[in-house]
Image (cartoon, rainbow, N blue to C red; front, top):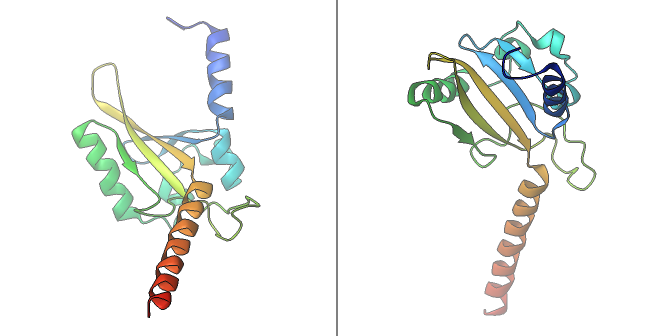
Length: 159
């Protein structure tokens, strides 16, 4: 391994598997090449079962044309892109198990799409980083509802 010893490689893999964000690496045909612990814990699909399949085989209910447009744009502009929960509450249908925000069925997600350049500069892989933003999203929705209620009550009080 040039430039990186085995010990460093080992702790990097360990770190990637334990971070509190999903990490998926896809090749240009949308086939999964890497799948971390977050993805396993929330999908119950082991990395060995995910690798070699397209993301659309693993999650057949994903809006395929929409996600393909997002990924192709990242490959074309060779720059990262973001998908926020306001645009689409979730990409991956992960159940929400958080006790405080148990009112929503699925985990709200922000997703970063990163182009991964090869040594020759071509984009051969795409990395998706999936963040659980359920708490933030549901808090913001609750605040918006409370503000709407205050406006209603204010109007009634001024009648």
